[in-house]
Amino acid sequence: MLSIFKSMRQRREETPVVKTRIADHLSLVSAGNPADFGGIIRIEIKVAAEALAGSQLMAQTANAAGNEIKLGPVEPGDQVSVGVHFLLLPNGAQRVVFCLQETDGTLSTLETTLQINNAGSLAVETAALLKEHGTPIFFVGPCDSTAYPYPTHTAWFDRPDAAQHIDGLLATGQISALEARNLHHFVEQGYVAIEGLLDDELVASVNAEIDDAVAKGYQGYKPGTSQRLEHLHLHYPNMRKLWLDQRHRRYADLIFGVQSRPCQTLAYVFGSQQDAHQDTIHLTPFPAGYMCGTWIALQDVVADSGELVVYPRSHRERRVYLNDTGCAKVKGDWKEFGNKVCANWAEIAARYEKFVYRPKKGTVLIWHENLLHEGSVRIDASLERRSVVIHSFADGAVVYYDSTGLNGTAVTRDELAEPR
View 1 (cartoon, rainbow, N blue to C red):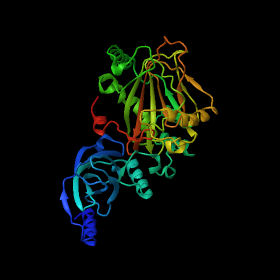
View 2: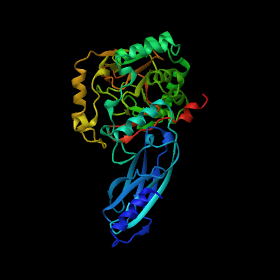
View 3: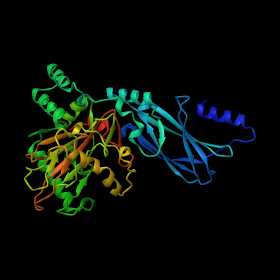
View 4: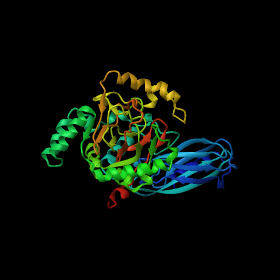
């Protein structure tokens, strides 16, 4: 019998004046799929209006006795979002049991099954770090950097011997001389630009799809603005082809040392004019380092068009997490974030020289998750600066968005394996 039920029985035996009544005061609203990636899924549970105030909600995996976790008090009618660190679960079908204990001894249970398929060296290492730290399998509330032992792991490209690592890959034939040079540049500068990586035909087909989206007012797009077009890969086949193109993913794979998994596309007709920032706080992996940005030029970028600007070597600066700044999780209003978080980035940026990026069409720039970058002011508002930004995570990392507390998703392994 599950320990969750054993512990309940023991408590009832210790307090015989309370009678146990079995009820159906829990219901499943939805359960995330671990195949959608990210190390975290959410299970949404509804507490019935008939439940008593002050009831306690607990969770346990059915095949791991003794791991009962108290999730806290809940109220009648609550919908509870339970996070699950599924990297801490063994592979296979894993039964998860939730238990609601009410103040009068009433007991309600709910069961769901998760299909777990953790794979790869990073998943193994991440799970070991989480276990050693005592990160719980289940939690309620937003995802937050304080749950993870960041100092316990440093990615190879952030270590003092990164150059030797690259040289070893070259010596063993795992990378070409060009790839070695590009990786050295990434390690030293925090970014690398690969000219002519993508063909004109693919770029032209993506531009045609952007034109179609603009003409249709996709996501309320207003021509001439710096508005971005999000997730066009979900609606247009050539954008999806670009999203999964192995030519740029090859570099992300080499940086991570495991398979990269893209999480979204952001298409721009004009420059973003976004202030200097790190991506770490918005697209947040554990362990640190296992996210990178990919910036694809869809045209020859010219001066005064609101060019991308990067701050070489700034990736070595401290990572800014929300908890470090005293800023609350963002729930639609970014004013506090701008006051408390952006001030940190401005202070860092002041110590570095800007590099204004004017690539040729088909050039791909890949940057370190912690590299400061921005969109410069559009001096000539008539000039387009067409580009696509893709962010990718490493397979086996925990993925969340520290700024909002949400968990992240990315392309599935099955989708990556599809012939293209």
